[in-house]
Image (cartoon, rainbow, N blue to C red; front, side, top):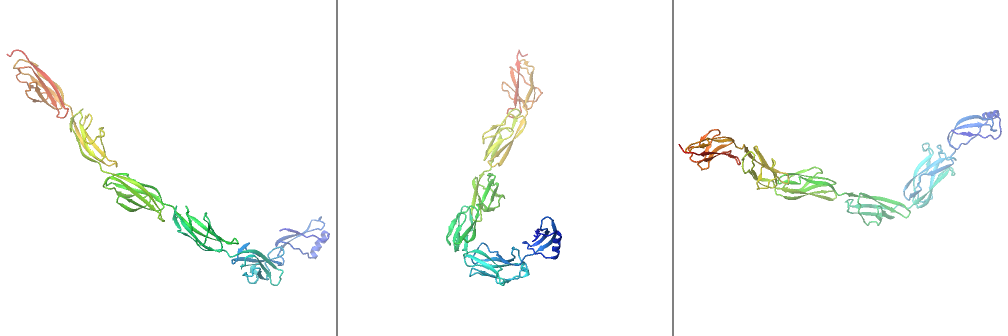
Length: 489
């Protein structure tokens, strides 16, 4: 609440002021409605507040009509809102106003509200619509039909009829990136322009555009009064499909082997063409299995991904098909050898590289390769591997037997008379023993530790004991001489 000061027309004492308040009526006119506080003071300004009173200020009598709601500039023929509000001299809405209002306009073609009589529900304000049809500065006036001084008006700028757009289209509406479309606008009543750098257009004449991303074009048609009408057309740009990867695994395979073809892509539908595979649909990241050709060679596989507009992205992957490895033969020059000796291995193979284990190494097909010194029986494995990693194997075993030894070889006696005989004894192991002499008298088999007679001797003789294990390198020899001397008895 705000205090209102009541000036006295004459100087009064405090008692006289109180009496005056009690016996007479004083009129005040606050400018605002609502609760107020009235404070009465002495006219001499010395006695302080003589009294206060709370009151409610109500609107005064209706003195005018406030007309509003019309936009500052409107288009001819377009319906616009308007309102008429009853007000007092201070601009407060007089909600108790019950007069009848009549509307007029400087526009002879205006469509105006009919007379309106205010009712309690209006709360002092009436809303309606008007249609102004004549271009230029026009005024709409509302006037109380009884009290002509209660009136009000609003002035607006009325533009001519807006331009028209019959159609604004793109053809096609969806394109691949890098291709074009055309925009066609059919309009009247003004000049047309299209944004995004297209510029001025003529009604009915198509213009070409090549957007790189989905673009909404706006057609603006403006008449001489600056009134515009707009329409939009969108050209959707479909990006070409993207192929992140296309792999054939393994890249090198043996004829008839199993392979996997996997494409990772977006923005379209994928198909694969390859050996025996014709337009096979694939999903991104999902491998398909296939059998490699039975004929060795290099084959090109193709992944094509096509979007909804027919735009296609292609990726390629090569597959190398190799024959399987083969082993024709794998053998040892000697399958049984003496410990501490060696033999050779011969491998005949094709379709890959070969290795032999147990430290032998990489042989050449058909060429013998040494086993190295062997001291125990050994099985050798030949492995032939092609470029695809396919393998074939073969084995050969070399048996190792102990080397023969001669502990001793003696003749007793070592000297005999002509016609005399000696006993030959060999102690040996690891093989069979045979005794020969330097005269080629024959070969006699002997047993270790068991003596044999030389028979009558007429001349000195050298005897040789040979012990063999029947394996390459498995022979050891010893010799003894029996001298024939003296005169026979």
